[in-house]
Image 1: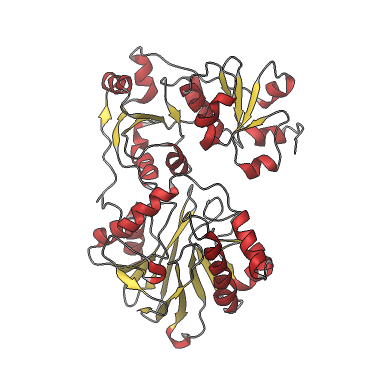
Image 2: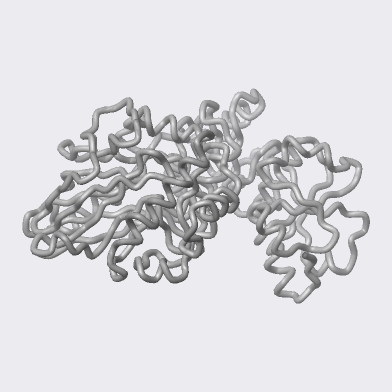
Length: 462
């Protein structure tokens, strides 16, 4: 046999999925697929295998599951999802129980119930057929991460119970595996599914037992307290994703079709105010001139998360793109967190809009050097996460976490200019566009933001 092993990292949401199999037998499985599934089909073709199995470790909260989409695209692959922990699904799947085994040539995959992040969570232990009792790897899903573990608080109930189950999973199952067993988690650094997930994409049981902070809490109550106190803020779309994935995501068959709209038609739809207007250009392009009322969610992989935080999945989206050729890439980013309803995109982008003589709004940019030289009555607003704020900030700043800004904007003075910063300027530009929507007339962005401030060696407050 020749083992097939492919890792697919989805930037932005920091999701990791896998294709594993045997090229002699010609069969393979995908673990925790994302919804834009062409990547797995291409990898299967490249490796000369057929995707016959799709394994889900649990009901995901951070992205739309691609299992139903991938099963439909292959035509033959079966979905395998946990029947442990009282899991209920609204779609056809093969029930997986603790101890179930699957073979791909001489590769043996064994499901193990590993609750804690969720009640139904399973992991998949992999071994060679000749050494089935000595696994070399384990796909840990969202239960054990590099330098972290899955948060137990996403159900909105039973968090203490789940944290206690997570303790049993880490110490009673993973902790008893050989130190050399490689862990392959379903998320990497930057995912809100765990606290401070490490930057490496895999690790070993032994390394995690030695350095993972969760393994430094070997008493149950101390572990439970730590697990409940460390998670980052929960994105608002997580509960929606849970419902979508439990019921079974809609099978699209392809990426959403986004109509191309001429400037006059686009303006008419903007003026009707029945759609969400999203400008996906960079902060400097947006700052130079944009359509009144647009949200600046730039087309980087992190768009998936911020769309999830801030947009209504039932309300159609109007898009302004950096280039018309970006439409497929941008569509892909929206689909990952369940956005499939698009009214259209502006053909020719902002160049076509301005050439049509339509109005523009600016978002002025300030440099960190200008800020350091003079505040001149500015309200300085930090929109980073709570942990970022605690670890250091620009002196004199007010803190409002970006997802809370629209509801808390009344805490700021509309009669005074507001300068917004984050880590690099991406979230700051988005926050500034929210303030413009809320009626603030003098809003400014700080490109480079806190990174640039520190690079210039200006003072930091803690």
